[in-house]
Image (tube, rainbow, N blue to C red; front, side, top):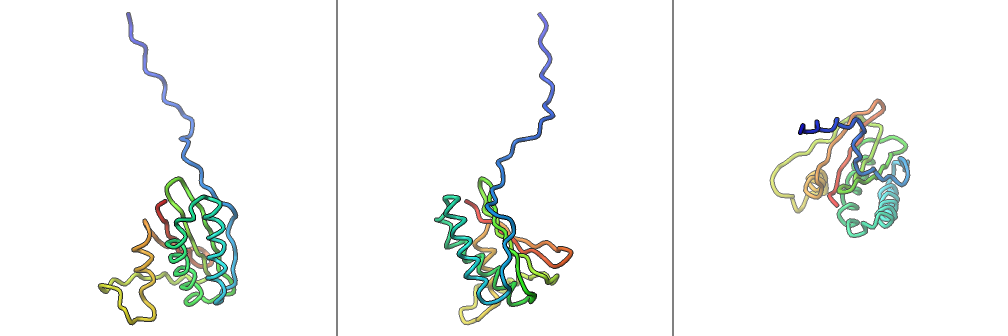
Length: 146
């Protein structure tokens, strides 16, 4: 009796969980209203995904990314993209500046500082975060574990 050879490895693509994006990139005016508009979009999106329990954390992260883009990048608009995979919610904000943000670790959060700790907060609340240089600016993104 001869043993059968093992089956040939499949050349079919691996079926990863799909990315869920409700809409593509949403463009918001680069002004003080952008953060509120972005939070409303985030709230509606998390509701559809059944992840409303992440709103407090995700809205804090989103507010930091949007306010940094408005404060430091200038320009007429910013782009917001939200998508999720099985275990992550991805938030990204695109602006027209190619200046990358810098995380400065100076110890505990200063209690009297008006600014300068936003990326420390983003780093503390997210699974990971990062930046990408783009031809017309940059994208700052963060991922929150579901």
